[in-house]
Length: 107
Image (cartoon, rainbow, N blue to C red; front, side):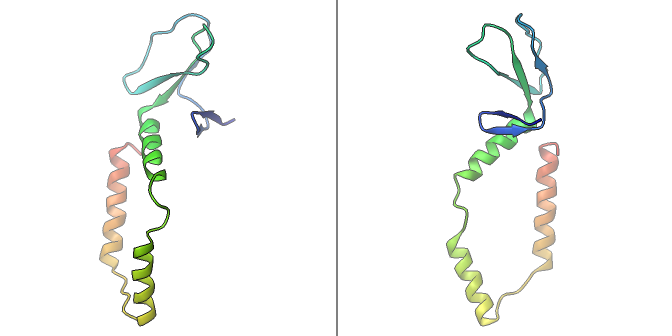
């Protein structure tokens, strides 16, 4: 079952407390979000730091334009006149940068 909190969807949470008493135990790498702010109980969901970082990244990317029109025009012109070159070095470098970035956020 997927959980949706603040427009974020996940397949589960690290911890879900359902008791009606206050729970003040937190792990250093988690953030707590009150699942039901109107309730006087201590219903909570803990979202990992990585999930929070990915959510922030997703929000940041969603504010960017989906298509870089100027780049599309440059590549289209290069394809049309036969000057477009594929650089295996650039592709490999980009893959390595992506791998490094994913390792930094713990994925």
